[in-house]
Structure formats: C-alpha cells, structure tokens
Amino acid sequence: MSPRRIAVVGASAAGLAAAEALRRFGWTGTLTLVGDEPHPPYDRPPLSKQLLQGAWQPDKLHLRAAEQLDALGLDLRLGTRATGLDTATRTLTLDGGERLACDGVIVATGVAARTLPAAAGLDGVHTLRTLDDALALKERLSGTGHRLVVVGNGVLGCEAAAVARELGHEVTLVGREALPMARTVGTEIGELLAAEHRERGVQLRTAAVDGFEADGDGPARHVSAVRLADGTRLPADTVLVAIGSEPAVGWLHGDPALDTTDGLRCDAYCAAAPGVYAAGDVARWQHPVHGRHLRVEHRMNATEQGMAAARNLLAELEETLPGDEALAPAAGRERRPFTPVPYFWSDQYGLKLQAYGVLSGADRSETTVLDPDARKAVALYGSDGQATGVLAIGVPPRQVRGLRALIATPVPWEEAREGLHNARA
Ligand SMILES: Cc1cc2nc3c(=O)[nH]c(=O)nc-3n(C[C@H](O)[C@H](O)[C@H](O)COP(=O)(O)OP(=O)(O)OC[C@H]3O[C@@H](n4cnc5c(N)ncnc54)[C@H](O)[C@@H]3O)c2cc1C
Image (cartoon, rainbow, N blue to C red; front, side, top):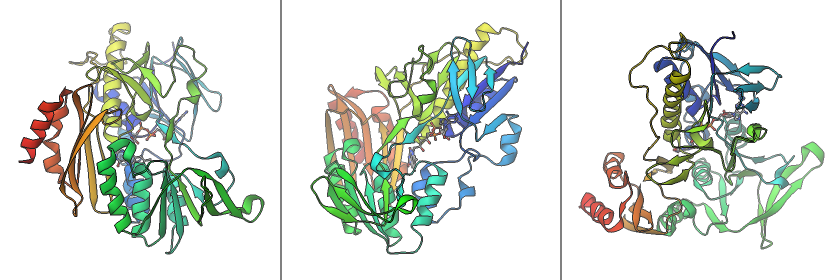
C-alpha cells in the first residue's frame, strides 16, 4: 500500500496555513506541499509597500524561518507546478509527469495577475503579483525621475502609485473607474483617496487604455507611451498593469467534477469534492452567514481559510480512515462551516484603510467624513436593507477593531447606522 498522503497545492499564505494546521490537528502521514515559485512561502502585502519602497529586503518577507518549515516534516516541492487533479481517484499530476496518489488535497493556488495582450514582449511593462515581479519593478524604478504610468486604479494600482510617488517618480494613475478604488469602496471614500493622490502629485486619469507605443525592435522594444482610448498619449518609460487577477484554476479544468467558474467552487466547509478542499484567493465558497458564494482576495482570509480547510479535511478523513496511524487521535476535529468576518487593509502614503465584512455588491453606502484634511472617515455598506461591511480610513487600528462587531453578521441598516454613530460618539 502506498503511504498515506495529503497534498497541498500552492505554497503561499493559505497553503502554508493549511500544512501547519494539518500537522497541528494530527496528520502524521506524508504531507506534500507543491509550489510553482522557487521561493519558500513569503508574504505578498509588503510587495507593493515595504519591498517596493526599499524599506524591507526580500528575506524579511519569509512567512517562516527554515527551521520552522523543517519542523513540519514536509515533502516540499518548490519550483513545481501541479498540472492536473483527478478527483475520482484523488491523483495529483505534477509538471514532470509524476502522479501522486493522495488521501486528501487542498487547493491553495491563489490568483495570477491579469495583463493586457498589447504588453506581450514589451520591455518596461510590469505586473505585480510575485516576489520576482516586485523585484523587477523595484529594479526598474531605481534612481529617480522615471515616468511611471499605472494602469488600473484599484487597491494595488493605488498602493504602487503612492510608493512610486514617494520615491520621486512622475506618476500617472489611469483607471476606468472615475475615482481610485471606487468599485470597492464607493464614491465618497474614492474622493478622499483621489484628493490625497492629487495632493501628493499623482496625475489621475479616467480612461480605457488602447495600447502602448514602443522604441526599438524585437526583444529590445521598450515602452515609450501609453495610448488611451480618447487618443491621449501618456509618455512613459515604465508601466505597471494592475488590472486585477484571475484565479489559478487552469490546471483543474480537466476534471468535470469541479466547478472552476471564478475560482474553485466549494460548499460551506470549503469542500470542492470528496477529499478535495480549497482555501485562500482561489476558493469560492458558500458563506453561510451571507448566504452566497464569496471569493475573498485578502491576506487574513488566506490564513483563516487554510486552517479551516485543513480541519475539515481531517474530520472527513477520520470517517474514512478510522484508527489509521497517519491520523493521530485529536479532540474537536469536527467539520465546521467557514464563517469569517472578512478583513482587509491597504496602506497609501501614511493613510491606512481598514474594512470588515463584505463591501462588494453593496446597493447602498453611507460615508461620514470625520476630518477631510486628515482624510479621516468611516463608511457603512449594505444590500437588501442589511448592513454588511464597514470601512475606516485614517482611524487608528485600535478604534477600527471595535467596528467589527457591528457587521459580524448582517444587521438591519438602521441598527448598524446607530451602532456606528454610538461608536464614533
Ligand atoms: C502586491 C500585493 C499586495 C497585497 N496587499 C494586501 C493588503 O494590503 N491587504 C490584504 O488583505 N491583502 C493584500 N494582498 C492580497 C494577499 O496577498 C492575498 O490575499 C494572499 O496572498 C492570498 O494567499 P493565497 O495563499 O491564497 O494565494 P497566493 O498568495 O496567490 O499563493 C498561491 C501560490 O500558488 C502558486 N500556484 C499557482 N498555481 C499553481 C500550480 N498549478 N501548482 C503549484 N503552485 C501553484 C502561486 O504561484 C502562488 O505561489 C496583496 C496582494 C498582492 C499581490
């Protein structure tokens, strides 16, 4: 009989949290962690902040020290891509052709940066998702006085624009949204952000990008301008394309049992198929409290969902492998629905945005600007008469944590408004 094995695919925040939880909750069998990047697990949020700024070196991004990884006793496959999963037999295929028979699989492959087809083969055009991407952009922005055009005014584009401006570059932030991050945070918070970026000297443009202009030929073609749909030409020597991401599910397309529309669809327990669970940016699971499928691209969710998927997988295996020596007895290993209160933050200049709950898909929002000059505000978001999310900008983290309770479960809009008012009083 082949040894008992659980494979975790994706060696980043969610995959690492899952691997650690599998050991903590009693898995003593083989634990394979597969990651297509060559680096040991590292943290992504600092890529667009401290790393790009030059405040941190790459080794500060490691999520665990080498000894901590060793202590997990992993069958660690870095620089290795999973190319297929047969859920009926729980067989994982790796890019070298190796096939791994597994008792359980956790999919934690995250998302990949979207790009523009016109950027292919053009030097000076970057995306920002991986450590290698961030190092390449940082290198590109060494020295001062670059002309950077950031395409995409969502959270990533805004953060990178802020850092590049602080580094002394000429920055233009172009997006389809009329205001920075407006699709996520709404108009009023978008206006505060726009004011901050403008005051810092970032040029803001609302436009679709039509293409690029380049100098040189062949592999030496270097971007020289970004062309907008209205015919405007923005001179640039560096471009960051920050237009969102695609769930990394291409490798799962061969299995008809899996629904890979906008991530890997899971039930409330993060299960996509028997013995197959998902966690982190790639997982689209049924949130029991919000009553709909959510896919959350936030750092804290990756850790929490990795742990939840691990616990639920082991609880399922306990039923199929009773008394097996690969699964040490443990208390409290029952399957539980995953019901987090999503949390995200963003840092731009000295400003911190923090949000709890669900902001996307809101049909109403209400913003109270506490101090327009300090860009200090709180906002409530909701749909169908219920408040589902709350955001604070420029408010100390300690105070913001108190707002979490307001929307931990959707509450009637007026009740949440009152709670917010009292919290501010
Ligand atoms: C620049 C940047 C800044 C961010 N800032 C914030 C922030 O301020 N606040 C916040 O809440 N969140 C932030 N995030 C989001 C946060 O980093 C993600 O939510 C988190 O990294 C998700 O972790 P994950 O493990 O699910 O996925 P990922 O971190 O994407 O990891 C998935 C891993 O799987 C690998 N992989 C993919 N396909 C395969 C395959 N077939 N085989 C093997 N390996 C594969 C990928 O290469 C990757 O290493 C930021 C993200 C970025 C990129």
